[in-house]
Image 1 (cartoon, rainbow, N blue to C red):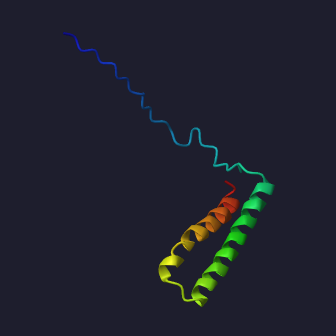
Image 2: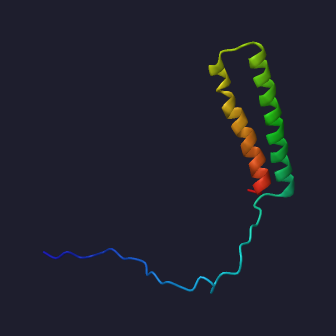
Length: 87
């Protein structure tokens, strides 16, 4: 009975960190128009969330229902940060 080793490992070669390092470059993967749309969405969503929160507070709704606003505020934050980070 023969056991054949069929596992291959990649070579690890330590190189000089200064050798291939030219500096970090960040290239935006969305256009300026798309960034503007995402920023506008984030700001609009944030304002709507604040209005809904105000209404819920004014009518003294159960605080558990206010927890659902985390989704709305999260969407607003995602739109804003995507526009600012150009992703």
